[in-house]
Every structure is written in C-alpha cells, then in structure tokens.
Length: 42
Image (cartoon, rainbow, N blue to C red; front, side, top):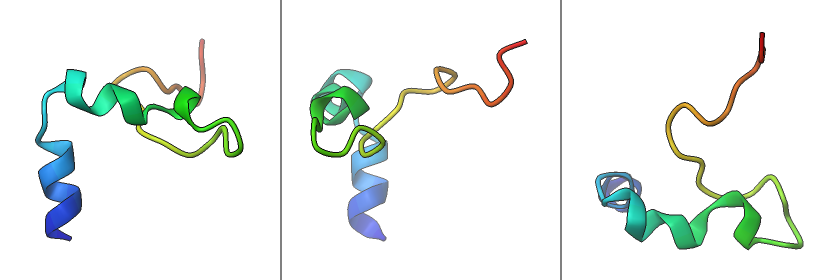
C-alpha cells in the first residue's frame, strides 16, 4: 500500500505518463486525473 500512496501524492505532471491513453493494449488501465471521469455526463 505504501507504493500506491507514494504514487498518488506525486504532482500531476509526474503521473501523466501513466494515464489511460498510454497503455494501447489495455485502454481502461492507467491513471485518471481528478474530475475527468464522469458516470453521468448530464
């Protein structure tokens, strides 16, 4: 659990290389920044 805490406490710029679009074989895998994912877009 310590490794995930360390990752999520990093600045957004350091997490961006691990965003969802950076894993072509698994498009739902990766980091998503706050308030970009919405379950109900209305």
